[in-house]
Image (cartoon, rainbow, N blue to C red; front, side, top):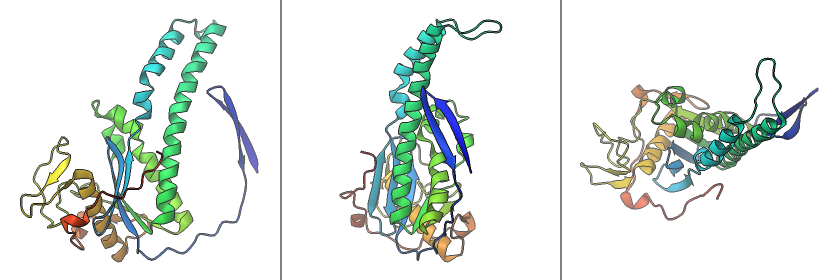
Length: 265
């Protein structure tokens, strides 16, 4: 139907728009449910209803790792004669600016590749995927976290899950952002009053559960997802705070971290 030719970072690509007949599969029965807790240190942590830790994707920090290289390229470009009103940019500026653009493109491509691998694996292998409905736009306003939140690209992760779950017949459930998934004990349901970001291990003072903070949150999200599918929230639905209720309990021994699915290693 159409074609678009674009240039980015010195590389040319052509995108074709075609019209195809695509059938949307019937939603699968909610048998394999996974809760995904996103973070900075560990990008994605996944756990099932019974407390099994099944997904662990470390954050490669694409932008942070390339920051020095990018700053060096930008510093060189700033010393060249760039485009100004009435003045054409020099060839040396064009060459230096090309290095900046290629560095940016490499960061974006590496980030997009990891997200595509992870979301495709989840949509194909799980019937229900549960994530938090995070306010990413509000988080990037925090100058202390903005760079790391933007580098993690949680919004793009959720966007790809949205359409890929429809492609493969799975369901995406968004749990309300105010649900205390990290503060709630996945064994007894006790909710802590406070939990700082520095506390990476969850200790429950009621039942004695000791578990990784992200794993504990992922278990709670998985159970909220089951509640959402049973209540009709289903594909793309939300579980509001009034619907929060733990469906099952997990023994501490069941929250195993021995077998992990590592994506993009």
